[in-house]
Amino acid sequence: MNPAIESMLQNYGVTPETEAFLRDTQRMYIGGEFVGSDERIDVTEPATASRLTSVPAASNADVDRAIGAARRALDAGPWAAMKPAQRERLLLKLADAIEAHAQTLGEIETIDNGKAIGPCIEMDILGAADLLRYMAGFATKLDGATRQVSIPGEHLAWTVRQPIGVVAAIVPWNWPFNMAMWKMAAALAAGCTMVVKPAQQTSLSMLYFARLCEEAGLPAGVINVVTGRGSSIGNYLAGNPGVDKVSFTGSTPVGRMVGEAAGRALSPVTLELGGKSPMVVFDDADPKAVAAATRWSVYFNAGQVCSAGSRLYAHASIYDDVVRELEAMTSAMKIAPGLDPECDMGPVISESALSSIVGYIDKGKAEGAELIYGGNTPDSPGYFVEPTLFAAERNDLTIVQEEIFGPVLTILKFESDDEAIRMANDNIYGLAASIWTRDISRALRYSDQLDAGTVWINNHDIVDSSMPCGGFRQSGFGKDMGPEQLQHFTRTKAVWITL
Ligand code: NAD
Image (spheres, helix red, strand yellow):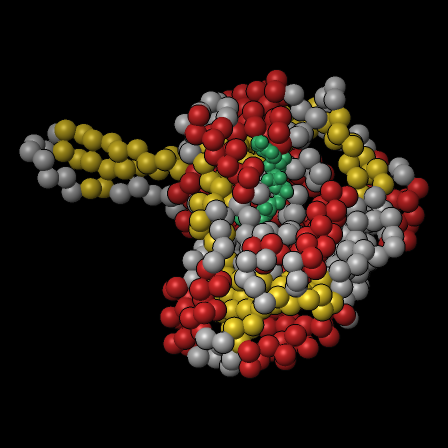
């Protein structure tokens, strides 16, 4: 292992399980077996910018094998024969295994991705176990209905909901474990089998999870994990006629390609894509609460959050108070490697992400936004950038319109409520938005007008297993989580008997 990573592990301490896993040769999981590949991809640890390990670069033949294994597990064998209640119990057991190994899973995720360890264990890992438990309960509740048909003759007619089949889940690097579970939990509850492709930057937590699937006794082929580049195997998987459903989370440009590939194969597709989510702060809001939620939403996970409240519209009468509170809270943040228990914000994922974020900061300055706080990259080998706060007067600036996917917030002033909602909606995305006011009528009126898949009132970036997440407009279509998601993983069959 690279000395810089050795010394980081020594410094902060990790479980023996984490250390042993990181020293192992990483293998994919296909048809219940751990398999290697001829080609491998180096994995870089973002806090030290040094080589952590490598993962297999799957070939198209590996993807075919994974799809074949998923198909066999769907059609025959213990998974296909399982009663819904047995499936539920198995998923609960898998959730228990995740919880029992939460510390190790959290450490692996933090080291691989750079995120702060505390929220990682709490939200990414234990949140995933919660979601699996929530969805497990639906295994026994996917009912059809009998229908009163009116055509001549005597008929009995009903519907049944069946698993849609083999699901391809393609997930991003910002929440590697959690986003994969946002697909897996509902798909497994519905009785589907899966091929999961994590992002090439962050495949480790899924590879560790494969061991937990073994431990929990998930039958071979129900979950297959293939690692590799999106442009090659991701694309091959998305357009593969052996796949019955594609569930994708990632950027809008890649989502478009995935949609095209799935369309050619006539596979139904769910696209959870990018965002540029507005926070609208009316004159009667509490500036401290706004600042606390904004700091959390736009700076945790180093701003690499699809629904980050990255453009904040504050009423002129409250604007200075919000800026003051935000500056105070932002300047108190500790930027450190994610394993540091006091870390508020870790590094971003990669050198290219860092240079893209710095490019946006430079563009913000060049286009006339005022830099209020941050904007620098600390002198360290890792991919760190300061939490950054801009003030802007124009809604059409690049930093206001484009998804930066880094810890950069822009605050703008407004005079009238209608003007604020107009500016909030003036964007290609429609993932999420928030409204801040003590006036419930105002909140309800404007929550209706905001063109976003989620609207929070007096909060931002909270999620729950029971609430569907998914965007409007260029943020995609379909929902993850909530009962709505089960629709994506079941198909309805109509059955008739003429008596
Ligand atoms: P990305 O689009 O670059 O990659 C996502 C996944 O797609 C990865 O596994 C990647 O390997 C794969 N991929 C890349 N090219 C592909 C291709 N041509 N065909 C098939 N697969 C391909 O996204 P990212 O950089 O990993 O993640 C960041 C993006 O994800 C941001 O835009 C963010 O807003 C979005 N995101 C959205 C949500 C949501 O719920 N809407 C949640 C998290 C992240």
